[in-house]
Image (cartoon, rainbow, N blue to C red; front, side, top):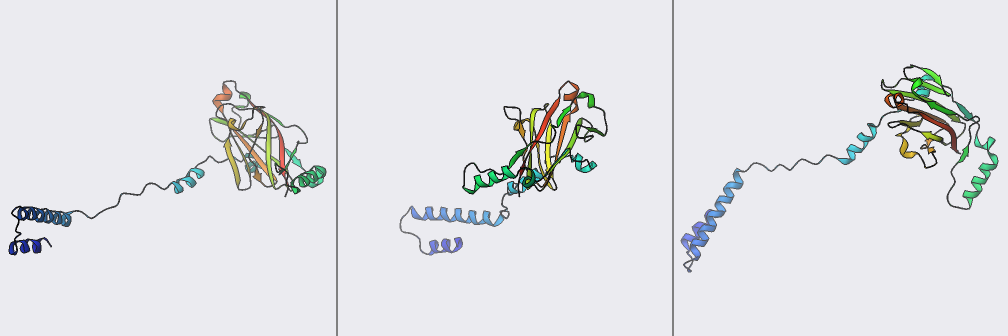
Length: 237
């Protein structure tokens, strides 16, 4: 295109005296641009940023797994409750009546006390033990710098179960989990403790719920203690 334009200017020069130099300069600039375009490397798009959607499952899979002490060592439940329909028939009828007329808030379960209070105390006197029964559960090694305890509760025919821990004291760095079958919630800790010292765990599906506690050995060695008492909330089918 540039060469044809140059030949045309030579055969038919413009009549204005300043127009010819201007057009010749323009032709030279076009020729330089074409040459540069022919010699430049092929365009390569910049690399795409890392996918945030791919990172989310990776972060979730990186969450520490529960030790699952009761499940691993076959520990019997520290408490077993009968189905709501047998033990809490009146309370279950009130729950259904409340929800049937769309009252708010919706009630999705009943709080039930364990047959006996289950108080759990963990302190430095337990450091150095391997596997030992304690407070209805089991002390078991999980990591060399931590003391771990696990137990289980069974609420027959329950759809979902939550545990309520009362009078909770957690040393710094303590971690807890609840789990049932393939479902796990945690780790969690002091961020869930209410002003009254209680802690409601997340719920997990099924009638068997395991709880695991992992405490830094250094915190216990310095005189810190861990303690709580159990009760449960069960959600009917």
